[in-house]
Image 1: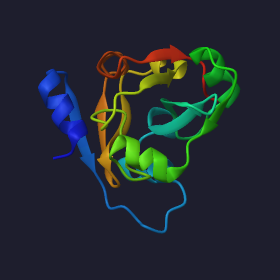
Image 2: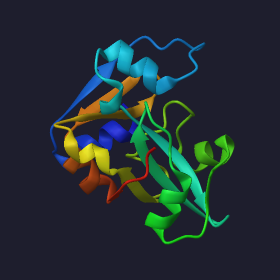
Image 3: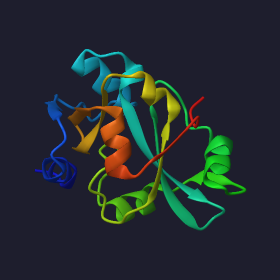
Image 4: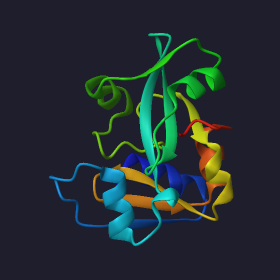
Length: 155
């Protein structure tokens, strides 16, 4: 059981675990998840780690069929600039590996931002903390559990 699933169980919110066979040759973990789960890509969200003004790490959660708008993230966070964190730093900070970074149960609590498109969904899918495993839950529950700020951060 991953830390993300442990966090969800402790919280008491409704969620479901969805496992699928991960292909290590895949280029897009998120699009692979959407296809394997038979859901529209806009309902599957990827968890990215960004660095604000070269110092503060934050979590950005955006649909897998879109990109993170770094300028919009910086603006939402009150920073001048945002860049994606390097993979090693993201893995070390979250305790998860690339393609399996969950917004829940991370090693270190980071400020979190989720794209506003999530509010239009009945449920969304995010990584459960391992490649080949996602969880589905209500967007409002994810916002609450991750203490996320909802903002237009995808393009």
